[in-house]
Length: 247
Image (tube, rainbow, N blue to C red; front, side, top):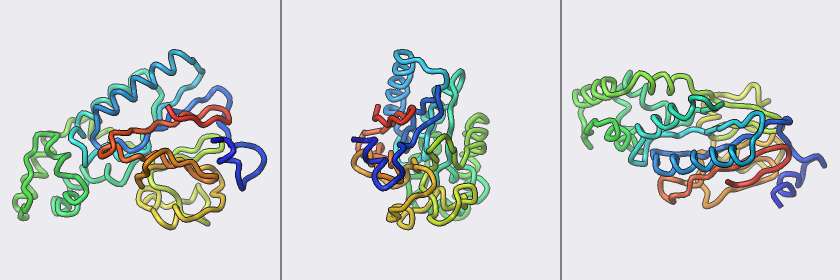
């Protein structure tokens, strides 16, 4: 059924990954370290039970905000990357930590999308109505609390990852623009122009950013963001050869 969905309206050949490659693509985590820990264990067990030459753990971004344990999420990912091939994409939320340190006035916008929860996960107690002085104090406190490994992780996130017939990105792509020429802001923020487009993008786009109730597989894209911070469902899709299966 999944292969039929991907083939519908496209060429007869199903999209596929190169031989010997298996990708475990995980949706938006948003501070749910508990769900991430369990999902990583499931992936490790799957790899152990079904070995393959090149297993890739891939995350489509939005590791922080909204949920209660953003700091713990980054710790888990950084530790898990030791000894595994992992791809970390940049979500629109993930730019806020470093940008806030440089520009404390961003607190007003960041707080509307779950930034206060992230500050608290680093032991920084925010104010709901922080004035300019308080914003600077909070930014300095976060800078002091942010481990060097977290700063490095956040500054080195990729924006996209092409592999075989698939193109992995956080939010999506702008229709009509070749994948190699997409704008970074679009790949982190785009919604309707991408979601409503039903034609071929050149590759199957695997993305998150816009929460759906369940894994959403369409002929031209796959949405793996199932709103983990609210639903308790962190989705992982396994791609190998021409197969697409939820884990």
